[in-house]
Length: 83
Image 1: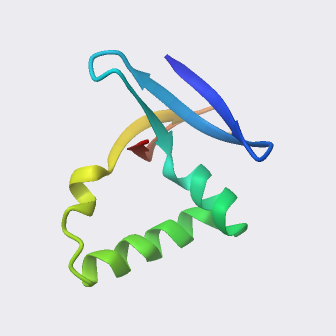
Image 2 (image 1 turned 30 degrees about the horizontal axis):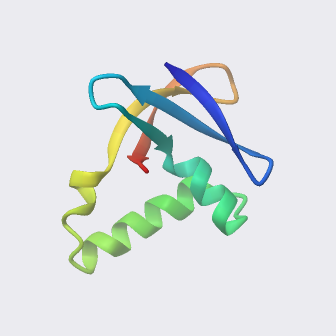
C-alpha cells in the first residue's frame, strides 16, 4: 500500500510492507525537508559516498529501494528506510 505522509506540510512518499508490518519512507523526500536543498538527490548521493568512505558499511544494510511514484507520474527505484 502506497501512501503520502505530510511532515511540516511537505510530502513524504511512503510504502507499507504488510509482511514486515512497517512503513518505508523515501530518503530523498526526507533529505529535502530536513536540509531545504533544491537538489536532494545530489545531496543524498554525496552523503552516502562520504558515509561509506568513513566506514559506515552498515548503511547499505539499512537502506533499501522500492519503486515509488515520482512527480512526473512514473515509478522509479527510490532509496527508502524504515522509521
